[in-house]
Image 1 (tube, rainbow, N blue to C red):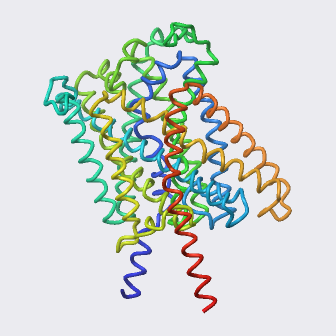
Image 2 (cartoon, helix red, strand yellow):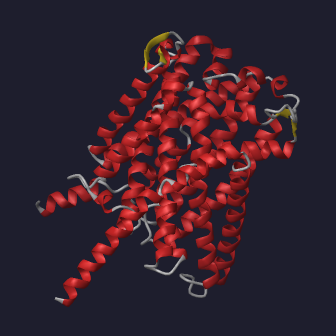
Image 3 (cartoon, rainbow, N blue to C red):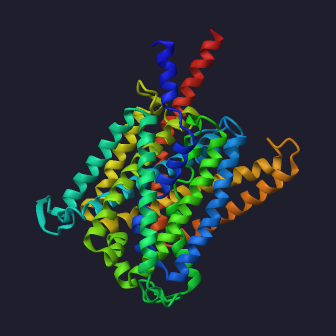
Length: 485
């Protein structure tokens, strides 16, 4: 390959500030904005929902600052927050490799589940134009199981979106990033219009009483603090993706852009989320909202009728398509970068001619396809609820580890060179981020079923850890043999 071609390929996969910001916003403002208003209303009263947003916004801001600081202080550690796990232990030790691998595994599984939430939400909004996607009519029976028409067609739509996006990304990272940027710009414009309409259609009576009681499955009353705890796991899902710029740090044109894109993206997403979720609660009564499969469309239709609903659905489809690009890019990049650090199977290092992690993309999307089978047996909202809690808990471990690693740097003074003020400030930020992560982990694992599923997903990584260790030992033996020869 000629030098000019190599330079062109290198340039084509470099991401600038605005593309990085679009990745952060696009990955955060994805399926959550469309489905969370319903999930949150089921979990908490309006007061509990708003409180959960504010607490989560502050906690994620601290986490975002940690990511930004680490991207600047440790530019050699690229690939995402899970990479920092290995740095908590002695370099090259078994503990270092194991913690890095398990953290990467959990984060990767979270990404795969996140992709399914994104893709199934796309199918949900497509049903505005094609109602047959929600049809409960029987289609065919196989091995005693009856597949409904709506579920079967939803599965097909989700599969086409998954693999269509796969091939778009393989054409080039920068071109995929530009598509994501355009989709993100369209979604922000659409959401601003929604907020304007929502301000005029807001009915105060719909959110009253602010501190309404909620009941658990056993019929017991859930207090406001318990409501906030329950809603916090769901609101955190909205901010998953804040680390997107950090994952692509090695592809950023400038390392300083990583922190700037992370913070700006967070504030844009926070404004959109709080604005829209609050307005939706004022546009629909609580009972209607809790049972809605498409809460934003149902809300806008109360004001603008079916035409408004279709317009918003179109914006939603563009938005979700852009988010799908960003999430699939992220899912492939995570194990690829981990493999470069010796924390994942070497096979994930395989690249396409354009320098893209082709093998990682193939495996990630293949496993994503398995997750999509959940749409065959569940409704769209049911599939969404199932995956977001599992995925959110999978993300919290790397978030917690990143915060602890920042604390380690502050305590040891590594990279600070006597800068006392910034060291103290970073220490406070890291401590608050750590406390926040622990709080949400405790809140999220309070439910035994959720905790069990989360542990099973994390423990499943052990089956892949043994080949990694054997591979590393084989490489070390080869190197030792070569040196002695």
